[in-house]
Picture (cartoon, rainbow, N blue to C red):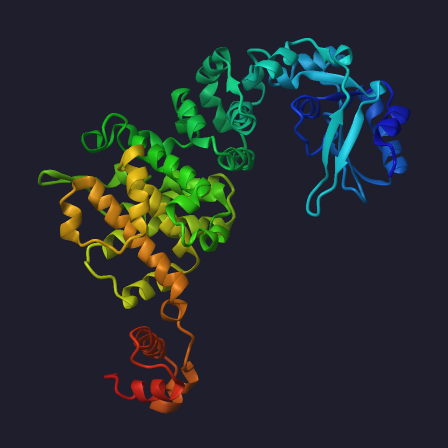
Length: 498
């Protein structure tokens, strides 16, 4: 393999490694690309020459800013060459977003470049043996890295690119850094500007933030700065809705608590579902998607709030919420598949509670639940767990989790211990549904014994919606153990009152 550091020095000796690659390498964290800055007049020729020497694909990304990208064919190393934003390197670094990103290291200093190829995506890169005396630092970036602080580089950074406000919280979550007070104050001042950012860019930052285990604590900070409801104005009305029920902060307080429980659940599946964690795992890999569902699950409660007697009710908030969530997700350029999944999770998230209103949950009820929910069945149960868990304290949750896998208590037993009993029983309902889904799949998703053609031939019926109803009756009979073969199914349909 070629010595990348020496190739870069030979072709662009006066250039500098800048930004994320320097900061990440100081933290001993790999980066997904190499950012290099050099004078505008040299970018095009440098990109073309490097492409030739490295046998890399070369793309002009932004003619106005002078940005070129190279990707080597074999190792998939991504190198971005960018013209100085300003007259020279110093002007470029002073315009960057945060001080820890306003660092540069000369290509001529020959750091050791460690490349880790990946099967999917570009290689990971790490600069090693960086000499401290060679690091260019005009803004206190080295101090910020050492103290693990995210500090805005100048007061204009968020006006120049409002997305940087969201990036501050995402970076804090990914790196385990804190955001400086002056940066938080600046975000509080500029938070309304975030609507200028493109939806797909916001989506990307939220995905990365929600993929961490520190998303909840950063959402709280975002809310304190006004950024959360600037991004999701639909949530602002939750703040004063149902405060009598949820306390100060109303539905929004509950929403954030559900988000926190979802984050905990996705990180601790074996604690919540020790028997089924491995089977649930493949369904729970898309953490950002589930956290977004948690954030939006009660989005319609303020719009549907109505006092009935001495109670506050939210009739059909789940159905209206699914529609409102779709509008939010469209704004953020989510895929149709993701919108359908989140919409189903939100639109049906009261179904387990409805099942819990019965002392016995029969196989027929579980069959209808998973039939109706399809791919959203397991994800929605995880959302319900987070929702139920939000009504108890951390200590209470730790106490009831081991009991949630025991046989379902009766409604009368649950009522004896008020709120905690109701939560425990609801969790036992979820465990029972997981048990039925994973342990008795033939009852929950029975194989088809006969086809629509079989029905039409046996009963001399023309094609019509009635055929589907008959096949559904056959499936229910299978679930209830009344039939188990093709012959029994054909005999069964002849007993139906059509």
